[in-house]
Image 1 (cartoon, rainbow, N blue to C red):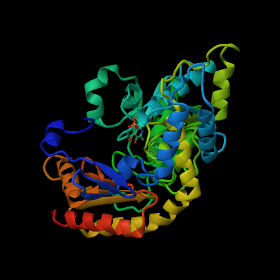
Image 2 (tube, rainbow, N blue to C red; image 1 turned 30 degrees about the horizontal axis):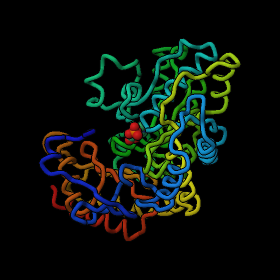
Image 3 (cartoon, rainbow, N blue to C red; image 1 turned 180 degrees about the vertical axis):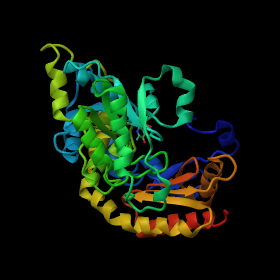
Image 4 (spheres, protein in one colour; image 1 turned 120 degrees about the horizontal axis):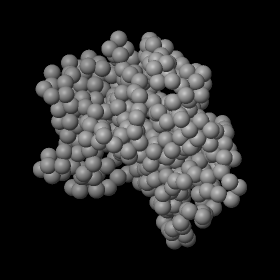
Length: 426
Ligand SMILES: Cc1ncc(COP(=O)(O)O)c(C=O)c1O
């Protein structure tokens, strides 16, 4: 099993058998409230009938198409719909099947763009400590988590890492920390000065580092990264696999933070988590330059996956986007965020809590480690499951990202279980 201590899991498997709304049900029918949208995916809640119906109808109508030299109308409709939500001009899309594929595709697009413009020497990538960009080789290299990298170190392409954005002085910040934005972003300037802008292709960041415990960037940080990229001709890529689709209050974190990247990667909630799908959105000029550099009848981008943009995924995505729009879920999430933050930060009085961080409907409680780092987080997530709450733990951080359809009563339930369990820890 992925990212799971398999032997421990097999001793006491924690299984989901059914899901509806904000709840999972185990095989015995016990309800477990979902505090993290499965894994940042089911923004509109579980068991959405409209999506099931759309996928069912699509499979009966057109089950599969190759997408090399062929396509189907829904792929274009899905990308049009997605482009309408993205920052203006990021409206050229490439469909894939996961966040990891989106990231590795974005790496190739960045490299292909520089080459298309006669600047093929730019091959160094920049990312950040504590980053998570999926598990393919490119994303593993970008990643900033030692355990994910060390067994593969010899085959990973060159990446320079910025410092992560967590600072002791900013503990218990609600939203963006006030300090450190300029200093932390200056790491990029230092890499440019050390390695030479002419060798650097792109900078990859999660606007908020999600998987490693919701590290919210300080004010000015993303703006400063943008300015340094502009000064030196580097592409800025936002990996919005977690942040996208209303998680931060707007459709995308690029809009919440008012910083426009050149490329955005998305996945997870793109189909409300139902069918594997991801996408890379690129600025129109990147698309146009890559096309212009290829011979008129030649393939412009030598890359693609058999299932990228498959009909069922496109149908699921369109149905999910319909729900987001019809139920105004991004606004709803934005309106719910202050109540979420209030309840989350109310846990600060518990003795085992070392830090709390939040932005939008994304939050983390960092526990004081006990024994080996990560041990306590791992044990506590099991206890929480047994007490009726599903969330994600990374190290000693407990991560929450409730569905945008959550009601106040759901938040009450999530936080009362969390308080009850955490109150037993010292
Ligand atoms: C920011 C980010 N990028 C990429 C990925 C990888 O996505 P997937 O697991 O769909 O390959 C994740 C997964 O959590 C993620 O959080």
